[in-house]
Image (cartoon, rainbow, N blue to C red; front, side, top):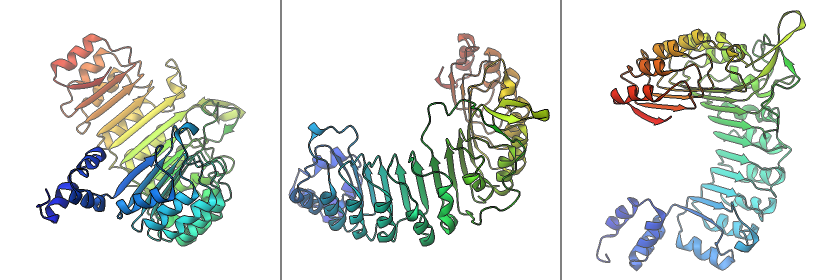
Length: 447
């Protein structure tokens, strides 16, 4: 091995992807040890890492070209030894000159002063903070000011981050392409509107509020099914570069907040709405009119209360067939549909809001390749018959669809394009229906 040309050794190492294999390879010879160390671009450390300054300095010297570092202390207990602290993070940030991607998970010993060390990482473009209990808005603001090239920021379970001066600063700088905020109690979805002009460059955005104990129940609030948050431009910003949008566990009434984003995303390709309260058909209609490139939509819905005539209210999901018709008419590139209906009863399909007729209009108007239906009480064997003639359908997953029986399975078995079928808790399907699938040589991944 010592006689091999350096270029050849480098190419061999590039083809090895498993960390354990790379560690073993580096023990073979001094040449491989040095070359592998120079080639290593990413490491993941946590419990068991020696946090002494000399040891960390030696680690950085061993891997001088690290571009991605993940420090993960999930499952850590005091008996595992000390965690990496502010001084240790300073070693990484000051000596890893090529560092562009840093993840800190469950790092309890790192606070705002330690995070301020990242200002030395002038090339840093991605930062993920996961369950960082000592980090506040002060530390995050120092990152916003010091890391001028920051393009991706993930904040997950960071309870002490509250004020949003850091967000306003990043918005003015306009460098972020990806922003993910999950389960941060001090940040609400109205705060995110202070991102201002930063929305123009943003390509991926996720916001998820911390789940409350009863947040999937209808509750006492009654919403207006006709309210149109997009009839006038309440917030002066645009997000025409946004391609991926996910909103989860937020309420958009009486303050509209991030609801307005749905009508401003002209480049949107992937949409995920999970248990968002107070939305109605007008939100999806507005989105469909501006998002002709939409390729994937995921709607996880729960029961909510909406006004009807004479002061009465009804309990149902947020949307009706009207939004399905709008998607069918305006989003002709739609390929993936994921619908989940939580809390509805099989004997009351009207609670869902969608009917089989409206659903089939969408399926027959777009080149749907992947379809996932969870508790879709409206789908029966006739619907399966219609799906059997869908020319693009490759993957179908049905979860708790009680009206689908063996007859529906016989229909879907005739679809020549279907390659993946998953059935879960579909009690109307028996071994007879499954045998039909076997005769058609189809792949069944679950039942």
